Amino acid sequence: MLDLTNPVFETYVIAAALMVLKIMGQGWMTVYRMMKSNSGLASPEDVQKGILNTDPRPEQLDVNDYVDRSRRMHRNDLENIPAFLIAGLLFVVTDPSLLLAQLLMYGFVAARLAHFVAYATKQTHEVRATFYTIGSLIVIYLAVHALVAALAS
Image (cartoon, rainbow, N blue to C red; front, side):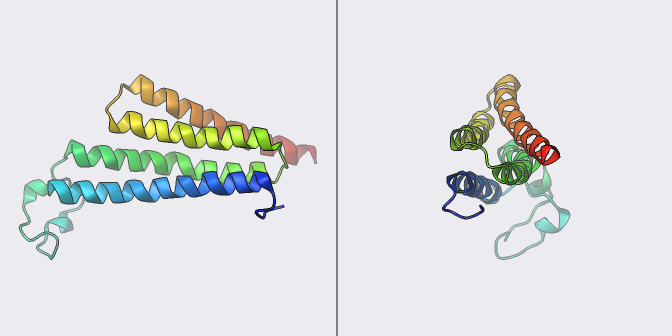
């Protein structure tokens, strides 16, 4: 049942809403960093004079790691979170146990947030990859569980 009286669906709604907010928040973080540093703009048309860019300069298009790091985190979210949103919902309709759903869905949220912290604080690739791997394996499990349930019905 896909309503909030179903605790498994409620778990999904909480985890999915947090991940949607993470994606959207990361986009706003990138905008904040571009405005704060007055650099790291992405497109040639961004260096036209306007209300927010009163002194456009060609070097504003140069890569700025402060901005680009946030842009890479956003891209990584966009590569990973949509798969969770889909696989998680498919998983919910298989009527799994609440404990399993909470472990997997909140585990994914925790892995993505840990990945964010690792990326934002410039940890090694191995640290980021560990959190990516945890989240990725959770999404794979969710999808395989749903597929097996569908094939068995």
